[in-house]
Amino acid sequence: MSDPAASIVSRASDRHRDAIADAYNQAFGFQPARSHAYIEQVGIGNFRIFSVGEQLAAVMAVIETGHWLGGKPVPAINIAHVAINPIWRGAGLAGRFLEQVCAEAAASNIGLATLFASTRPVYRRAGFALAGLEMIYEAETSVLPRVRGGRFVRLEGEPAIAAIEALYRQRCIDDAGLLQRSPAHWASLMAGNTAVFVSAVAAAPGYLVLDTSDVECLVVRDWAAINGAAAAHLLTFLGTFSSVYPRVRWHGSPQDALVFALPDKGWRLMHQEEWLARILDPVAVLQARGYSADGVLGIDLDAAGTDIPLALEIRDGQGMCTTGRTGLPTIRIALGDFGTLVTGHRSASFLARAGVLTGDPAAIRLCETLFAGPSPWVGEHF
Image (cartoon, rainbow, N blue to C red):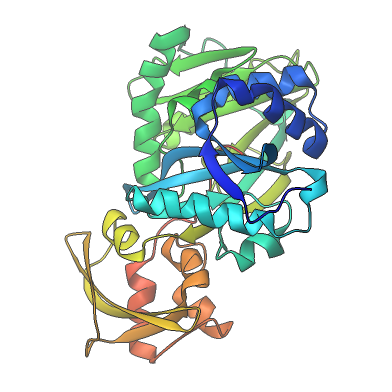
């Protein structure tokens, strides 16, 4: 076995395709065809290789993106499908790999790293905090409205993406946590047997991306309803599939518009999982995200025993952040827990009751107001 000290992290190239496919077979049981299809969707240049000597010891996908917070996209990386070679498991490679990838992102002025964790302790030790939700709902198509003649247009290829991107962006502005989708995200979303339907009713703007490959369940790959009329309009269109599909399934938010618009019972929550975030550059993140209120707040971050004092001033929803001690109302929180506050996944008062955040009552109330907004979620698993 090679010395792990003689390791290097590099961007993958075409010569690594078979090695990555083998790593995913060893780690996740992926068959070669599935691995190569995933590599093609993501793009070989979006993989990072951890090599020990001449051996591929670990691999992960690193996709540049953003998470919409407060109506603005915060530059981020999604870390996905982290695979460790079986002979290197337990050697601490995952932590070292993450550190180098996060350092690379921070050097490129990216302030946030996010992922889904199969084993949370590893990522919590690496500074990741619970930051938002993935939720999957399911409903019986028999409970959906059965209004015929819904006005939708079916689109394909690039025109389909062009038509729905603007609607998706509007949804991101109104919501929280959603991804600033990269070409890799769009390629994954549109792969396979999908069909895009866009509402033709001006007063009900929205769309559906449907996967019709499973006759037992109609899968909504993606959707947007810009208002309540659009949510009802989407449901009436989904109801036209009731003679073929007994169920329909979709990713949704904690305050889900389709659930709210359903005319009756018959829906259920099928899956819920939290995604994690690590703050790579707190100043960059605080200045990139948007805010629903103005104010001035001091934030003391504890970074493994080293204090990072910040002053956050918000005017017209735009944050300006500087370092240094202030006489402002101040809250204190560990840098490793800061992600859950920044995304709005947990409020300042909740974190104070949990013993994670401290500060005088006025500072906590102000912090609560500044970071208020919709509960963060994502519409895809990365």
